[in-house]
Image (cartoon, rainbow, N blue to C red; front, side, top):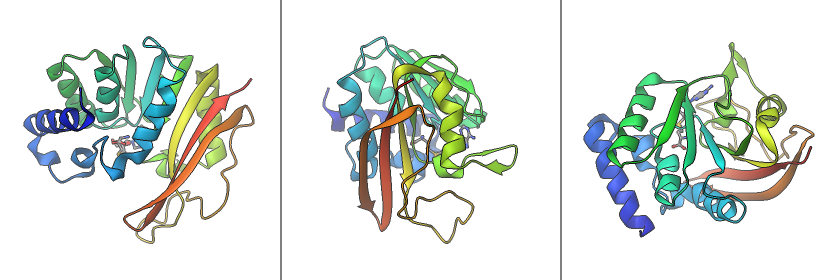
Length: 208
Ligand SMILES: C[S@@+](CC[C@H](N)C(=O)[O-])C[C@H]1O[C@@H](n2cnc3c(N)ncnc32)[C@H](O)[C@@H]1O
């Protein structure tokens, strides 16, 4: 199936389920759009080492569009978590409408529901992750996830590089390399400017 056609179909289903998502962050997520270059790069990377039954977990999955893209490509062991039950209900409805079997779990503490996971993805919110009111550093964030990854498994994470004055309570990279869990090795790093923001994609591999 062509990426663009699938994007349109997913958007149509999503807006049928919840018209209020129109124009919001969730409905703007399309794999073929420049906005989602991190998804496309992760997909290219993932297909080279994953098999169709690999355990893939998307933390903070929102409306589940990324997992739906994977389901459409034949991946069968897909899991999403989110801190919001409302958005998970939408994600579940979208998955069912498309005939996909994706499992969703309510969680706001970086628990990986099926572990060890072969791949964990985090898009669009990693720098604002708070647990018990504490804003996690890059190190703390990755230290929670790494033990739940299989050795050899990968973590793909999108981080903002530049500070946004409207959102000071976040852990921006600000030109610095993130300090991450020592069991992780960088497998891919890319940065791009999009709509005035600089966004980084890091894919790490768990080595031990
Ligand atoms: C900007 S949206 C990104 C959604 C999706 N990852 C994407 O790229 O389209 C951020 C999502 O992260 C969820 N979220 C925020 N904090 C979270 C946490 N601590 N644990 C799990 N999900 C969280 C929000 O409820 C929201 O659905």
